[in-house]
Amino acid sequence: MLYTVVISHHQSTYINSFGRLFGDRNVVFVFDALTDDDISVIGSYPSFHAVSVIGSGNRSRNRNAGLSYIEDNFRPSDDDIIEFFDGDRVPVKYVGPCMSNADVLLYTCENDKRLMKLVPGPVLTNTLCNPFYSCGFAIKYSAIKKIKTINNGTLFNEEFLGWGCEDQYLGLQCAKLDFRILLTDMTVLAGSVGGDELSHDNYGDTLQQYIDITLKNGLFPKM
Image 1 (tube, rainbow, N blue to C red):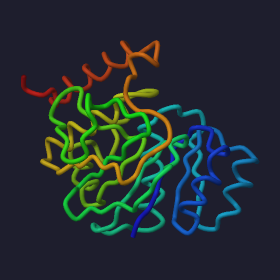
Image 2 (cartoon, helix red, strand yellow; image 1 turned 45 degrees about the vertical axis):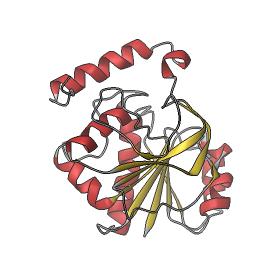
Image 3 (cartoon, helix red, strand yellow; image 1 turned 120 degrees about the vertical axis):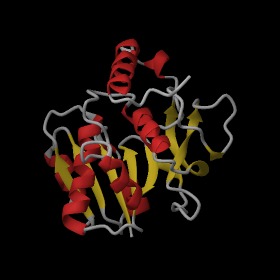
Image 4 (tube, helix red, strand yellow; image 1 turned 180 degrees about the vertical axis):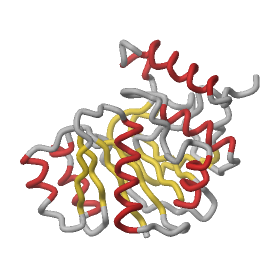
C-alpha cells in the first residue's frame, strides 16, 4: 500500500491538484489552521483526510502528526510506502515510487539546487550539508520503524522549530542506519529546492540550531 502525507502550505489552493493525481489514495493533509474552505475541498475526495495541528508551524511535528494518523487508522505493514510532500510541491511529473533498490527515494524539483550537477542515483547522506530534502520523498515503513528506535519514537526530530534542516538531520540518521537513498527524476515537483541561504533571512539561526542538535545527539559526521 502507498500512503501520502501533505503538510501545511496553504493547501486549499493545492488540494484539487493533489486530487487529480491521488484522488483514489489515502492522503492525509496536515494543517496549522483548518478553514471551512479546506474542509469543503477535502470533503470532495472520500479518501482524503485532514489533521489539524493548531498553530504549530513546526514541520517536524506536522509531518509526524500525518504519519501518526496513518499508523493509527491504517496499520501499515513493513512493505508499505509513505510519501511526504509539502503542500506547494505538487508533482508536475509523477511516477509511483519503485523501492526495490532503495529504502528512501528523493524526488527532484523543477529548479533543483541540491547538486552542482543533478545526477539521479545514490546520494551521500553522511555529510553535514547532505542532499536530503523532505518537500517530496518516499520511504519504506520498515525504515521508518528503524529510525524511530534512534529518534525517541518519531520519524522527524521535533527539537527542530519552524522550517529547515529537520530533513537533513533525517538524512544523517538514514546514513547512520546504512539506508540506501536514491535521487530520482522520474517524479518532478513544482518549484525549487535548495539555496535556503539566499531565500531565508534567518538561515544562519536555523543552521546553528541544526549544528547544535546534531552535536548534542552525536550525529555530527566525522571529518
